[in-house]
Amino acid sequence: MGSDSKLKQLLGLTAWLLVCFAASAIGAVASIQAKSFYADLVQPAWAPPAWVFGPMWTLLYAMMAISAWLVWRSGGLRYHRFAFSLFFAQLILNGLWSWLFFAWHLGALAFLDIVLLWLLIAATIVCFWRVRPVAGGLLVPYLLWVSFAAALNFSLWQLNAELLG
Image (cartoon, rainbow, N blue to C red; front, side, top):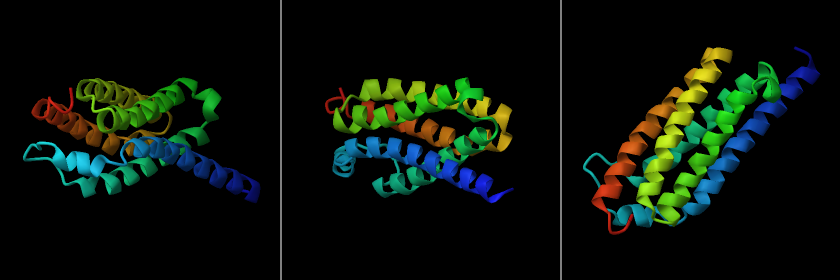
């Protein structure tokens, strides 16, 4: 691989990391008061402590970026337009969830959002897998975490209906 090609690949990876962490930052803005709000909620016995979420999401966003980069390397945005449409749609729903749950305290809408997010992630995995199996595989932990988060969202919404109406 020539130096121009290596530079292009490095810039591409950097761009995907920026895209994914920009989406993360949009959600994080809504989560500024999340730690205290989360602590005030009635929790199911299986709820993780608040400190788990930051490292987990950091790892997952990095894996999303690498996954997208691998697919991008195999033909670009135009060639894989549908797959990337799904990818960007799930990033939007991911960022929106934090606003719905933490900023606006809308438990039912947050749950609907996370169900749609789950479906988009699953569809993205299928599309990415067809291009590069490792790219699809990198999104599986994300789907598993969102599955857990959906169950937690539902449980918190039900246990705290007065706060998450």
